[in-house]
Structures are given as structure tokens and as C-alpha cells.
Image (cartoon, rainbow over all chains, first blue to last red):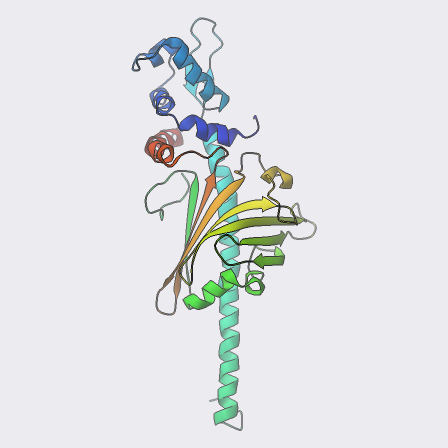
Length: 128
Length: 172
């Protein structure tokens, strides 16, 4: 996979024409001519968009010289999830520790408060 | 799709949202986030330690944290991170950037730590704290800012289509 694919993915998705092309491809593979139909755009212009999508790893193109059908590739979008999932784990586990810490510190403060109370009000230090 | 059910508006894969309710008063949770000696007690996943934490809590100020992985594991090293505070509302809200760093606080790409080159150089973290009468609801948003930042309009524009696309891909 080329470096910085994720940035390329998001950059590719930032364009409405390219999103429309991807949306079209969710219902199956299509040729450049078919993809160009809904847009008032020349074939070279559409080809340019396809190149951006291909570079971003969002689509793959067939080998047939004449037809070269385009189809959707889901992998880059899964990667988008992957690094966020790593962060999710980082935060969730950190917050588990934060939860423990908050519990501990409150227990300690309560205990200290209780001891002070005992010393002041109950010289014998008896537990009630 | 990631579990971003708590997200108020969008559900793109570019952000994650985590909500926790802590059985502690809001002031204590706030201190745990903003006082280095307290942050060091919890920063990092299970088994990690935090040997260094600097917090310059003002807009434009920076933080610099070190997280140390457990000895004898793949993570047996120091991971530094830094960021700039963009917004601070005492007891209520912190907004800051977040990046990997070296020990001097210089931003480095994630691959410096052997992570994928696809991790954005800069991320945005927003944490809010809500007083629930002795308990605290904390919500964290974590978003990636891709290189060559997109305009606000572009982001809004594609999020809807992207959602639909993601839905169809989930079944692919």
C-alpha cells in the first residue's frame, strides 16, 4: 500500500464528482463511458477523476485494454477505521485507569477526613 | 462502522467519540486532566506508565506527555505526544491538538513509532465535563486532520455521501 493512503483517500473523497462516481460503483462495476454519462464531462475529465480514485486505492480497474471496467475497493476505508480503533483502545484503557485513580483518591481523602473527625470528636479513636 | 453512536451529528469514520460517567465530582475529574502529577497516574493503556507530563494550561500553551510501554513487550519504549490548547473553559471543556512527538516536543509522524503512515500528523481532541451532581459525564471526541487540511465546506459536503457509501461498503 502506498504511503499516506489515508490522506489520499480523504482528498479523493472531498470532490462531489468523485463521490458520485463511487456511489455509482456501489451498484456494480462500470466502464468509463458509463461513468461519464450522468455528468456533462468529457471522457478525459472523467478519466482524470478515476486516476485520483485509483491512486487513493478506492477503485480498481480491469486489465482489458478497451473496456477497463472500474470497481470499488473497500480497503482504504477499512484502514480509516483501523487507526481510530487504535486510539479508541488507548483512550478506553486510559479511562479505565482514570476511573480507578478517581476511586482510589476519593477513598483516601475520605479516610483521611474520617480520621481527622475521629481525632477531634472521639479521642479513643474507636470506630463507630 | 465504528461505534460512534454517541456522536451528536455525523458518523464518519474520521472521528471517534467516547463517553464515560465517573463516580467522582467534576472538579476532581478536571484536576485529573489538568494537573501533571495526577494525569501521570492514568495516562496510557493498561500496563503502561507515564514518566513525564508537562501541561501549560492556557490557550496557545502546550502539553508534552510520555507514555512508556510494559517491559519485554512490543511496546517496550517511550511514546511522546504533544499538542496545543485551542480552547479552555475551566471545569467544562478542553480543546487541543494532538500529535506524536519526540522527547523535545517536536511533532513527528506516527511512523516514527512504527505506526502506519496513514495516521494523520495532527489530530483534534475535545473533552467536555458535565456535572451530574457528584458524578461526572465526560465526553471525548478524537478526530484526524488529514494532511493538506480540507475546507469546512468540503468536510460537510462529503460526510453525508460518505456515510451512505460506508453503509454500502460494510455489506460488501
